[in-house]
Image (cartoon, rainbow, N blue to C red; front, side, top):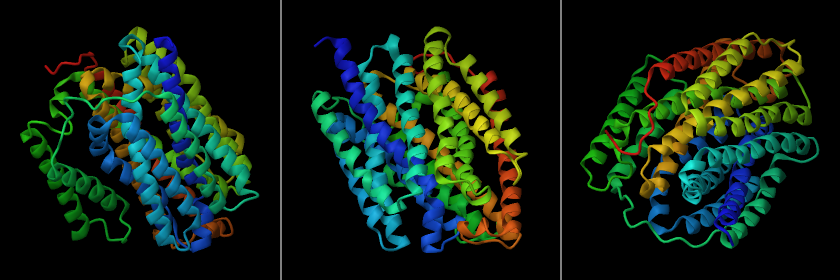
Length: 474
């Protein structure tokens, strides 16, 4: 077998793992209304079905990336997919909302294992001069999952319960495990794998968890209250403690000296804030379509799928542009388009036509593909080859921290408006209460003002900061 064939065989196995977990993640947003109706819980509560996944993945990606470097990436990737399939199946069987969350935790650990390994394993399979091509191909695989997830889920929701849809995820998960074992050769553990102690792991988990809970505010504390202030201060304290612990370690989980590299530092900032803003659309658009505009599941899934189609199209172009001119130009174009789309979405009303929303979703997909591919390529280009496992995990943890913060922020804004106007009700009741639908639109508008401002501000920063690519700290 030629080396070219070997790397594309490995890619096909890795791609299926990404298609499956992304399918499930995008699917989860569409079933929130159904879960809310069955268990009679509000947006603030049911949003934890997706927030808990982002939280677990963000908290454990780096430690698990280190595990892959130490134990072998192929083995960890297969184990992660097996755990993911098992957790998805028991989610569909959970009799209470609390057990749904427990099952989602199990699923999320498997998701974290896959994401911690997949990117590093993919990058290690391709030569440096094809890194942009590899990242573009990975983003296309993600786009396939993102496109098929909402579309098929929307169609299935019209005939099946959300429980059956979750249980069916066990099938592609099992196939992915078999392909990983069959198509990816066994790998030896990295000789220079990084090993952080329990203190660093616990500090990073505590910081990410407290940040999420503080922003989401599930206990409805006043924003100026002492619990909120305490959560913010503890988040900063745990974060600072993690940095000190890693800097003092001779073999840190993440070599923080990477942040001395301009490309790595800039790409991290862009990735974090970019996904913080972008995830607002992922969370809120299905609720708008199903609970406010009262569209069918099939049409809702079709609209949301256009975002992934746009992302897949632009990802291939952006990967090749990155290989030719570097990350700055495609990043600025993508962020500029994202800011324009979000500003336009702030003018949505209960009378907005669904075709306009489909166009907005497609344009946002183009925007994300344009800035995401060069961003991840720049981060990995600044990572030493013997740390591709933890480096790949860090690209995913940065994205996931952005997602979890963005989901918590968007939900908090909309929930605050709904509560302030007296509509803290299950999502299914919004469509039967015109005043509640109008209140949701008020929260939507405020949320998209915030994320459009974040995106435009980020574009200005990205234009001014350094992007020089090197894998040696300066």
